[in-house]
Each structure stands twice: as C-alpha cells, then as structure tokens.
Length: 139
Image (cartoon, rainbow, N blue to C red):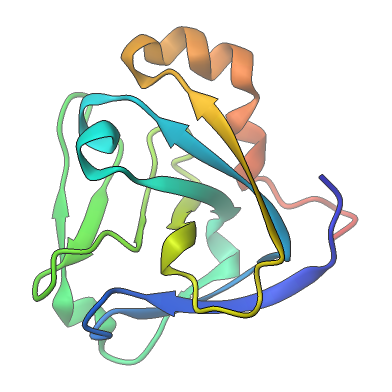
C-alpha cells in the first residue's frame, strides 16, 4: 500500500505514555490470534524502530511483559494498563503501534490483515510481516 508519510502522535489512555512515529497515512495493521493479542484485542501496524520516538518522561510509566520465546516485549502503561506500542517477535527491529492509540487526524486508512499467531511460524513465513520494519529507500 503506497501512501505519503505522516507524523503520528499517540499514546495511552491516561496520557502518561506519549510517542511520535513517522509512518504512512494509510497503513496495514495486523490482527493476531495468539494467546496475548487475542485477549488484549490489539491490532497494530509496524514501523522501523528508527521512526519511533518515546516522548517526555514516558519511560517511567512503562512496564513490560514477555512470555514464550521472550523476543516480543509487550509494553504497557503502569497507570492505565494500555498497550499503545510494543516490540514484536515478528519484527524485533521494529515497533508495533496500536492503531487505535494514534491521535485522531493523521491516519487516513487502515487495512486490517490477519496474522495466525496460534500457528506463528507458518503465518510468519507466509505473511511477509518481517518486511514491515524495514526502511524503504523510497520513503
């Protein structure tokens, strides 16, 4: 999906965690059915880590949960519990942004794709999700 780049601000419910990300105005978000994502209902788009910036004193309000391979780092706010972003197993060089945590006005379109996290390896190999955290030379 081709789209102009935009600067998106966002964060958690209580606004103690705030961030800025450079990403297209039109994004592909991933809905996953792994044990964690299905319980949280998280749907996210992935960006290269160098396009993500944690703002202000947000770090002090974050805590992290990991399980299984401990590759994914599920960050969430210590105050309100919202996971506005995390570091995904599929893209350890990227950041997964919960698209519903982006402030209104900069995302113009969200295409939701399905990731079969219950069959992680097979879905990873078939989905091309790993490419989502690579910096495209055209952007």
